[in-house]
Length: 555
Figure (cartoon, rainbow, N blue to C red):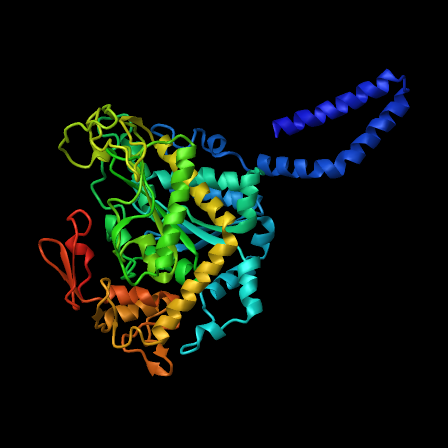
């Protein structure tokens, strides 16, 4: 905006010098200058409107008095809510909704972000997204007959790509919730061509904190002890009243208020095609994990979901590499198997569920790690989780061998909350831009995944039960069939019928998410060697750090 103002001053000054140079009298000079300004008004109006919008929405740094991610500086949930509402009131690109309240009564926010025209017609696009996920399908109906050719083309050609990002369900992992403040400001005020492309092609749904209570607790605790020997230490209580860190293990049970609130967004209202859940991990190894994850896979997930998962994850990695970032890894630590976590659950609902994990700091206090040499691993150091070590200098990283999934390893040094914010801002925008670039293709592919899923269950492929994760036939009874109905039908009720009959497993066969209860209901056992055994008799051996006993649901 300063450049635009200086350009306008330059034009008017040049005009003034011109009329003076030719000896025009004062009354005529005034008339000519006024006429010139009137002639330029239509061209200057967009500049003025952008200026007014930007002036009405202060940058986070100006609003909060510090740069987001600055050392030992955090924005509380209460302050963040106030800022988001300020943006929502000032920008036609951002719709701020309080969809409910957290366990302890704090606002649970959903931000709907797109072009002003799209936001003004948001109900139409929400209906198109529900059509994309076959919410108008009747039990027993051939999915190929649900929509006319014109209805399908409307989805493919006119609809947007719907992307959800959720932040900081684990409240000590503060980076994503803090980063969201800068992300929203940029989308609300920028006229950069990249941002405009995103706004024109994407409906961006943002839940800036999946755990508002925890965010408030963590910020209060950190601020209380900042500047003391206890700075960055852990609270002596849970950051979610009932389940603490396991709030990310509740998607198959729906026991917590926050789970139900995000479930309403996911499977009753919006059905986003892409769902990115942003986390943090320990601090001694890679700087960020992006998708795809590693084996084993789950056979109840459509292969195209896994393929898209990799495409968007690699778009994130490429954007980070382009920006000169280091320590970007994929295809290790986190598996494609388990249906218990947040965005992981999206796979069984035909959503491109994605995870990022950033190396942690001590809340907002930097960490320092000893230096390593490329390709020369140091001896492994003992100790607990590195991200919350009280040591001033952590041991040097040991995973320093370049390879396909980790081409530029992290070699140690200082790591700050601002680094986390920068990485997550790049990842978030890269996800949105990739969705904008392949909007029509994405909608066609998701439509086909949903159609074929319904067809699979109508054809009786899961009759008498469902397909287990390893390909065998297993029996399902009761519990999770009800959970599946609660997720997509909006309440606990009778099992959905299939072709006029009660489906043997109780799976809501008229919904794309039928594969979720099919996975959750698998009768499985696991022995001390962490070998999965299913009713089919198949086995799959996995390393202990990949799959733990508590991650297997027993019916």
